[in-house]
Length: 495
Ligand code: CO
Image (tube, rainbow, N blue to C red):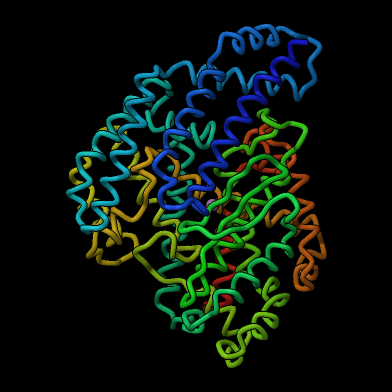
C-alpha cells in the first residue's frame, strides 16, 4: 500500500512538472507576443505546487516507511532511495533562498540581453556577480567533499568530481592540443557549399526524413521550429524536438536536427511504466548529451551515414551540390578550425571551448577570480588555447546564456557526453558486426536497439558510471575519443 501511495505522489509531481514543460515549450514555439505577460506567473504557480508536494510531510512519511520495507523489488528500492535523496535536497533550501535565486536569475537574464545588445560586458558585471555569490552559497547549503564546485556539478552529473574532470581536460590539453595543431597546419577542406541558398521547406522535409530514419517515433513526439533548438518531454509518449532553419546555412538545421533527435530517442526509450519515478528518468546530462552527440558526430558526420543519404541530398539540392563530390562533401562537413563561438565549433575544438568555461567556473566558485576580471581572463584563454583574438564581448564572454540561468557546473557535461559517446559507439560497432554496412544502407535500427538495451531503458536504475562500465566493460576513458578523432581526421587531413 505504501509504495502505491508513494507512486501516486510522484505521479502528481510529474503531472505538474510536465505541465510546466508544456508551458515552457509553448513559450519557445507558438506563444503569441502578448501571451508572455501571464506565462511566468503561470509557471511559477505550478512550480510552487510541485515544490510543496516534493517537500510534503506525507511524502517524507511514506519514504521513511518504505525504507524499512523488505518486500520491495530492486527497482522499487532504487526509486525509494533516489526519491529520498531528492527530498533531502529539496528540504535544504528555504523558500527565501529559492525566491532570491529566481529573482537574481531573471535580473541576470535581462542584464545579459542588454549587455549583448550593447556588446558590453561591463553592463552584466553586477547581475552576474550576484549569481556567482548565490552559487557559492548554494554549494555551501548542498554540502560537498573537497571542492564547492563538486556540489554544483552534482546537480547535473550526479557523483562527478573535479578530480575526474580535471584529469579528462588534462588529456584534452596534452593529447588533443598537439593533434589539432597538426590539423591547423594542413590545407583546409572547402565547405562553402553549405553556405548557399537552401530553401526552407526542402530543408525541413529532409530533416524530418532523417529523424524518421534514425527511428524517432512521430506518433510519440513531434518537431517544431524555435529560435534555439532544444528537446523536451511530457512523458515517454510525447517527446518534443525543435530545430531552426537558416536558408543561407544548411549546417544550422542539419546538426541541430540530428543532435536533438539523439536526445529525443533517449527520452522515447525510457520506461513508460516508470512514469514520474527516478527509474523512468534520464540518468544525467552527460549521458543525455552522449546520445545526442553520438547521433550528431559519431553517426551524423560519418562516411557511412552519408553513403546512405548524400545522393538524396544532391537530388533535393542539385543547384547547390551537383558539383560537390561525395569526398569533398564529407571533408567539408568535417572541417576543423579555431573559432569564437562554442555552438559553431567542430567536434574537436569544441572541447577547448568547454575547458575554458570549466576552468573559469571552478575558479569563480572557489573565489580565486572575480567576475569583474572575466573578460580579460576569457580573451587570454581563447588566445592561449584557440589562438584567436576575441574583439567582441558578444562573440566572447557574453556568448552563452548558462551563467545567467545560474547553470554553474553544467558545461562539463557537454564534454563528458562526447567522451561517453565515443566509447559507447566503439562498443556498439564491436557488438554489431554489420553495423557499418547497415548504416550505409540507411538502416539505423540495430544501433538504436543497442542503445535502448544498454542505456535508455534503465533510467536512473544505474548511475552514469555504472551504465558506462556495464555497456562498454570499463570506466569512462578519454582514449576512445582520441582514437576516434585520430583515425577519422588523420584520414581526412592525410596525416
Ligand atoms: Co544537447
